[in-house]
Length: 473
Image 1 (cartoon, one colour):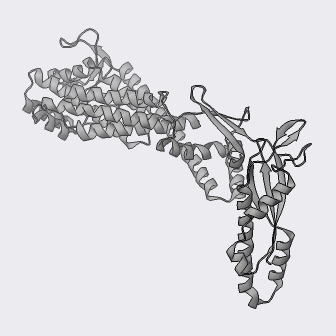
Image 2 (cartoon, one colour):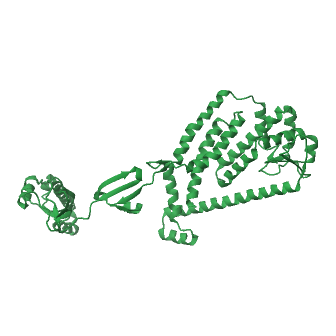
Image 3 (cartoon, one colour):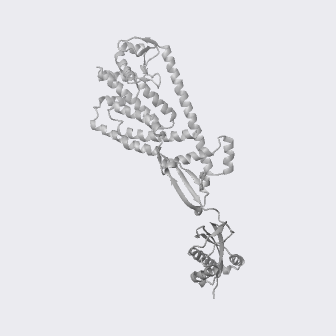
């Protein structure tokens, strides 16, 4: 169900983009055949574009929105009672919004079921109309079209290759009415309506789908009106007939009828001249519109991530300490991300790491490069800083950090229980201790590589600690 909801959102956005530009640029043009083709193309292309396997390296804005929607839908339990308990336990706004989102999805699915049931009921009603009507012959009707007469029909209509007419219209307006309905049958308008009705049922909550349906119905009527006027019927006579039929009730919304569509639009279209040929250049809007729809339908490329050769989930990726990552390889052809992290360091090994030249060289280096911070000197701060670091398998020093020494904790206790008039002195000493720790970290980061530690004869990572003593003289 979640996959269908995500697909329906992409479908709805694609249809909205394409139809909005049609309504802006082509709706008032008299290219009825072209307009019908464009509307049908929108109906066909909009559900197909989201299925095109188009991928991008980076997630699009639509992907980000759909990810926020997909998360609550997949995480919340389906049972309402369980969901309520989960919500009470979590007590978070995210859970509430996710629950409301799930309720919205339920309403949408129920709406589809109701819309399809209504459409099926209308189709059954149409079958009843066909069965109760009597087929008759008429000189204007070809053999492949069924002319059906029923005493209860007051509004001439057609569906597929059936034309329905009442006795009054058969006697008074037969030629005009039959030309109109034959145009619907010949141009196969009923198939357009079936496709559009199915779209409207599946996207029942999208206003643009219903607006597109009405525009398509209007184009059908424009084409049928044009066929009637080209058959020799005068404009005034035809307009009077349309006005008389406007007060009658049509048979079923799924059928083509004489008064279907907005009469004001039909009159305006019949009185307007043909559109300029240059207006066809507006069709070029389809190019950027399709590009925009492809961008909306594009999905970020999904890569499998391997940590030290093992496939991992997104949660495990987030938990990785960035400081332990040694190498990241992206293999686009295989859609893989390979992450290699350094192994856990040893605390004790067969041969511990060694400063080049031994301990004497180490302390000599410290004596030459140690820096006593000015702020610590001014405030008379001294003490010992413990530094923890890792000697990599190649001897490099990484992950240098200063840890609090026992002397710092003792100082902290003195400050915590001291008199209030010593608060300023405490702040100054804290700043001095901070400066000593930063100086010690800087000292070790600048050291040359060590001779790496070895375990079973192989160089390995080793974690070590050293102390730096700061004393004023």
